[in-house]
Length: 92
Image (cartoon, rainbow, N blue to C red; front, side, top):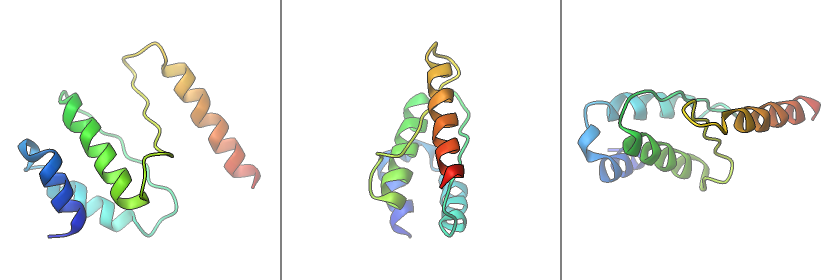
């Protein structure tokens, strides 16, 4: 069992059926510079824990993680932050 798989099982054990596909997707995409993940579903706790676990496992911290929730009024602020970050990246 990979380290990521182990950490996910520790943090969201009640979502065992989806963990193999998450681990597979992350292990395949780790070769890329940017990783984008869209997580849907009603289990807000599992989604948050999964995102934090994957981000800290692959990148060592959650400092560069951006969460956009379409259910909150701050969505436009998060979208602006993302747009600015992407523009900066394109300039460099």
